[in-house]
Amino acid sequence: MDVFCEPALPTHAAPLPVEPSVNDATFGNWRNAAVEVWQGRNKDKRWEDVAPTCYPPIDVTSFGGKFALKRDLTALTVAFSLISLRGGGRGTHPTGVGARGEVTILPTPNLPEHAFFRPGAVFPCRFRHANGSFTDDAACTLRGASLKLADSDFESPLDILFNTGSQGPLWSLASFIRFSKARRACDPVKGDFEGQARLMDECPAYLMSWIEAVRDAPSSFADVTYFSQVVFPFVGLDGVLRLCRYRLRRPDLEQESGLCDAARQHEVWNMLRKPEDTRPLDYLRQEFTQRVKRGGVEYRLQIQVRDIVPASDTLEVFHLNRPWSEARWPWHDLARIELNEAMDPTEIETTRYSLGHQPEGLGIFRPSSAVDYRSVAWARLFIYQSAQRARLFRAHKATPAHPYA
Image (tube, rainbow, N blue to C red; front, side):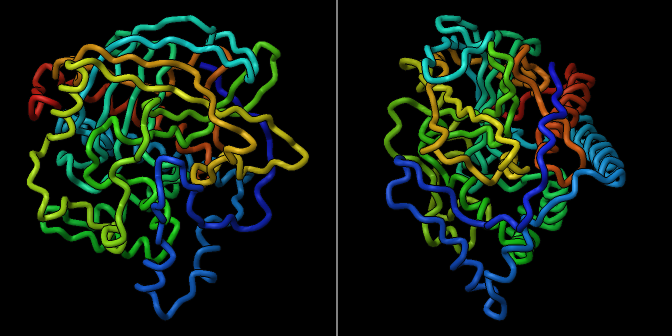
């Protein structure tokens, strides 16, 4: 895997705005009401005063920043590994469903040619959908997708990880640690999510991005859109370093499912299912498995590619919650994913995905501090691999929690 330290872009001079993403066509008239929700809870404060404190200019040049990055990454790696050792499961998306099939690379005449993405190339694949944190499919939480371009437990030329939402509840390692501390203060069993609510009051960027990212009891894993959010390097046959992002969705998706309605947005920190929802805990996993068995599931892997302009670009280009303009950098269909065989629970459990699986010409950026926006992918690389080794250590004792684990 190639690790890139360039481009050496300056930080943004002013705080970045906290604002909703531009609605996709599949969102209809849906609206992110984070400003109204926050202002209703914080009547003695003004959004205009607090929001600019969320995404301030960042310092990625100090030695102290590099030390903090190593310290925080080590602490999280140990924490996630202990979770896997104790419970045998994944730390962030524990409950999922899987399928295998084929990935066919499509022609992309409007993009720079890339050695790996050769039109017509076909790869076997494994694929996993999962809920963030919760085993209950009706919870109001993130939904994830993992793609491996190989029919293998681990080895692969390319793995890509996705979550719902063009924004998410973390934009740096430091923001993830802050979010994790707030989550630990909650007690889902008792329905207590006040720790998360307080965090969203203190830093409304978490509220804005959480509303964008979570899906509330969607109709199907296949009825939502998934984003890498993370920015990756892209070096084409011309040798020029560019930036790219990935997106995943059904080609015939007309209406995004699970977008939070107004009532849910006013208590979006509460991740429990609505009391009136009586569907089974695993209804999404059941539905996806049956969908694969009935006739398969087809997705499109899409890509955005943009040039680096040193004269005007800043570190904002790497910010996970600053989606790129689709008018300037449109999404291009990169590959057709055809899933036609449901995976059994053992295969789902033993399949491990890693951002370290990158071919030549792709790769990952090396961050300079824990507040560096590039630190999210870097942290996932080390934390997930360590946790996976811990899971393997006790794998001979592990059994899936239910038929769709």
